[in-house]
Image (cartoon, rainbow, N blue to C red):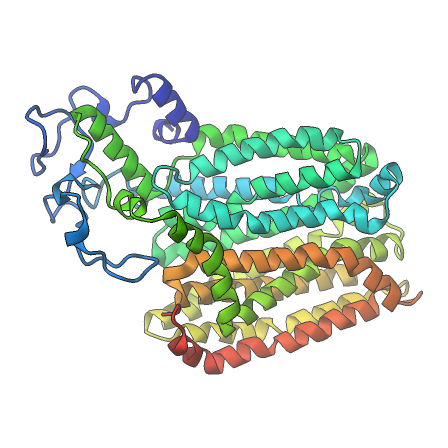
Length: 554
């Protein structure tokens, strides 16, 4: 517990304000002895330090001069570096307890749970107010499209956020926690004016702000998990995290329906304040910094303070300090769009995942038409109808874990190309058009209400599997530009999800009939998703050729 608090955001603040007297690291405590195999250069007076200067290749992780830069793919020139390699700070050795990959399994699981809690806490907010749309329309005298704009701008904003927060968290001086915690604090604070707002314009503006500051879990959640979980087990950690990312938007309407019916729509934001506030209290003192670059940067900072020698630095600090503003801006804003629109495989996979996201958000409009309009559910019962989506996602996660362990993993380790993972998509992709048709044409008075709920679960079984296939394929094919690839994918999904709810109700109503109110609109969506089935088939056959012609892919 002590090490969690010491390296957390709150622990760092306490440590800094106390001048290093409280929550000390082992190297700051009296009696600390530096291992005899290491020496400190640049000072005549040896002092206790938890910094390892790289001069023993057997007990430290050597920074080879020809190590490839992760994003550029080109080897940095050691001759061009003004830094003495004897001043490069790194781990004590392969068993350094501050290295996140050396943390205990229990600690890693606790951190994974914290990231999932953070993700759920902010993504519940996307659609939590939608059960109170009728109340908002009546209070602010607006139509349903305007009442949905707060949802649209929220989703769009958390699609834009990763383009800023993802590269920011990679800066050694910033790290993960200095992005997570301040943004979560702002998210909590802004729920107060959102709950008290007196006009629709203010509600839209506040939702845009809260959507933007809610995006760090989407931007950096996967990176935080990758910081602590080994590459062999990373897929399983990401699967669990993605379930939490899925549950957030789906659980929002359930909670929102309870408060909208028993209180009013404003109480949905008070509920969001309580949930996110509790997450803030937990994480501010119990979520440790996981970024290797940031942990080492702080170690180097302690060394500089203890020795008075300003030369001590880290490899990440060197690389980051050499980047110009133009390079950082290009990596953050230009490269994601270049890859998204110039790489055919990436473009069509982005469209596929965006369609899945859009259909799920469209159901926030379709479910009331079906379960309130046809089956006469109240708000709480309508919120409970979303549980089918949650169950489908959980079943898909368990199934995909088993598939990874028994089928995909062994073949990839044997040298199979990344495209082989699309074999899984061949089974999942047909579930999308089938489930959408099932939902649309079973939504009628003569069919039991459980059937469209089952259909929504089947949809998520297919959709979730497609998501995992796409993310794993992109990760294997574009490892050097993963941040850019995922930022572009986030932006695609958010744009689709923001736009679809604005016209979904009109589409269902105008294309529907009295007996089948959402059938023909669902048929249109099913037809589009049927065409998308061709994407994994084509990439399974031609994906390796597209990668061989790409300047970004491996």
